[in-house]
Image (tube, rainbow, N blue to C red; front, side, top):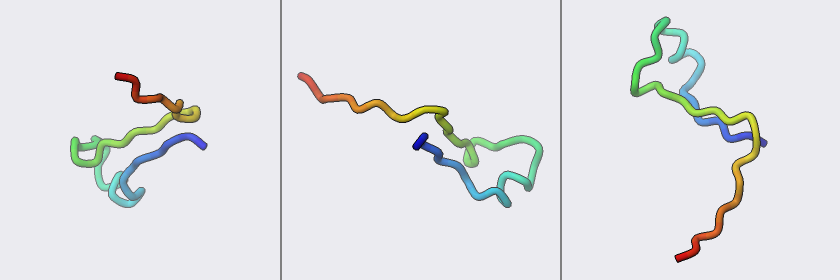
Length: 38
């Protein structure tokens, strides 16, 4: 399932402009697994 990190919808609807503290991230695909290689 894609990663979604977003504020509550009611908070987003308070203004037409998304403020920095309400910034969100959304991916349309799965997050790849990456190994830590030194």
